Image (cartoon, rainbow, N blue to C red; front, side, top):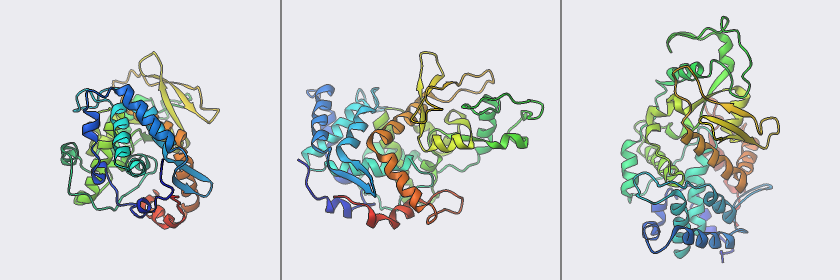
Length: 363
């Protein structure tokens, strides 16, 4: 049964960065050939059931429960083998983390790490962590840290040009007819785009903020590497092509109106694939959007959005919705939006959460 108090874990808020810091033996569990994945998942489900009433996060009337949050991660974990991990799937890895944590009495702590180092950075823009990295790192984390680099925004103009060309200067949710003579398509990304196109915005499918750190900041580079490793191990999707300026590849962008961009970035809707390649159905609690058909196919010569990146966005949207994490984070953002606004206009979430830490309950 879960303990009644998590004061020790609460005091470590902002210091636990990765599973390696917790020193739990994940590899032994997931590498045990005598422990089938379905049995491991069943064991993990039993553990999460025992933790369903334990609060991971609380702010005002919004709560995130440990067991429900971990259940959601199990529900939407990747079913394919994780890159560079043989036949280990995202689902097996997720169940193995929960089981290994249970054996060491650290179920709450692993939920905290997943929340702080994977889910929370995906939700807000401009989120920056200020913790000290552990000296002990796995080869997987070391490899990723050697690969990760900050995005420089040097490819931002090209990304916008390619995505606009692919979508013919139309919001994918509101593909209204546009007079192409009044909105000429530029011949190159260095050509100025007509003012009419500026009402449309290129939305990153995987947030730019995961690569937004100073080139000489080893701590933030380490944090970014942790983000990417955790995303890869949970979703089973290779993510190395998105590191650095790869975050600006047109396969990671879609064209939306400003309102649609805000809703997409807040995970208020996501895309479910259909039987037809690059054709999707929008899923959302917002009635006007739910059920809308979207076709990403194009004759422009620009590749459609990568289905794997859309699947990652959809998985996070479902976890945020199922676990109550979306409501929890949005409740804080609404109350604090006037307190912590970064210079570039994005919310400085690390300062925001630090300001309200005393109001967050871990009981």
